[in-house]
Length: 335
Image (cartoon, rainbow, N blue to C red; front, top):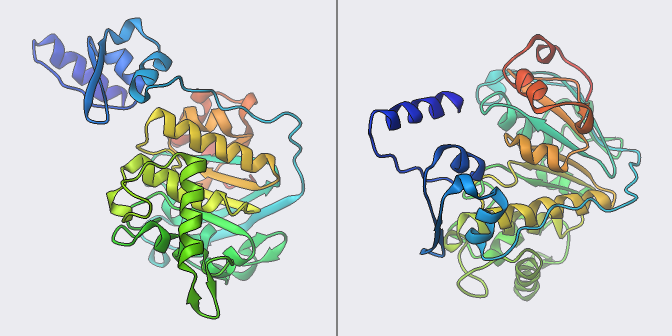
C-alpha cells in the first residue's frame, strides 16, 4: 500500500491528474487534494479532505453521524466454546496453502481476531472451521465436542454460525430471493421448514426481521440477492447468522467493501453477540477493525498461526511485522 501511495505521489509530481476512488477515508485524507462525495448515485458534497476528519467525511457519505462501536459494560469471558487442536491440512486437500498445527481456543464472551495478508491461509482456515472441508475428528471442537468430521449443517445444529468472505456466490446465492437464502442456511436449525416442506411465510418474516435490525435497504420486500448493493447484502448475510443468536460465530472479512455506516452496524452486532456469551472468530485484513472490536489478535502467515496477543497489549506495528512474516509468526502457538 505504501508503495502504491509513493507511486501516486510521484505521478502527481510529474503533473498527471489522478482520480482516486475509495471508501478508505484515511487514504483519501492522506492522498487527495479534493474529494467529491457520492450518496445514492448523487453528488452530496465536495471538500478538502486534509481539513476534514474521517468521521466528518463519513457523515457526508451516509447522511448521518457514525457512532462508535460500544462494548457493553461488565462483559465476562466464560469457558472455551470453540477450539482447534493441531489443525493441519495439505495443499492438495485445500486450494493452495498448507495449514500447520493451528491451535486456537475462544471463550464465550470473547472475540478473537485473525489478521493476515490475503493468500496466507485465511480461506483454507475458514473452510476447516466451518466444516466445508473436514479434518481429524478432534481437530475442531464446539463446546468440547469433536466436530472435525462433521460438515457445515451438523455444526450449525450445534449452534455455530459462519459468514464466508465472498458474499455473492458463497454467503448468498445471487439468483435466489432473500427468503430462499434464509432457507439455505437455516433449514437445519428450525423455523423455516417442517416435515420436508419450506415455510415460506416464516422465511419472509425472518427477512423482514433482518432488514429492520440491520437496516438492509432493498428494492422490495423479498428481492433477489443479486439486486442488493454490496453493503446491504453483507448486512443481510451477517444479520441472517447473528439473529440466530449462535454460541459460536466465525466470520471472514465482515466489513469488506461496505460503507462506514454499514461497517459500524456490523461491528456493533458482532460485539453485542459476544456480550451475550458467544465465542467469535473474526478473520480480517483490516487492522483498524480488529483493534476496535477484538479482545485478542493472532496473525496467520504462510499457513501458520502466531500466538494471540491481547489487543490492548500490542500495536499495529507489531501485528504488521507478524503479517509480513517475522520469525515469531512462523512457529505454531496456541491462540
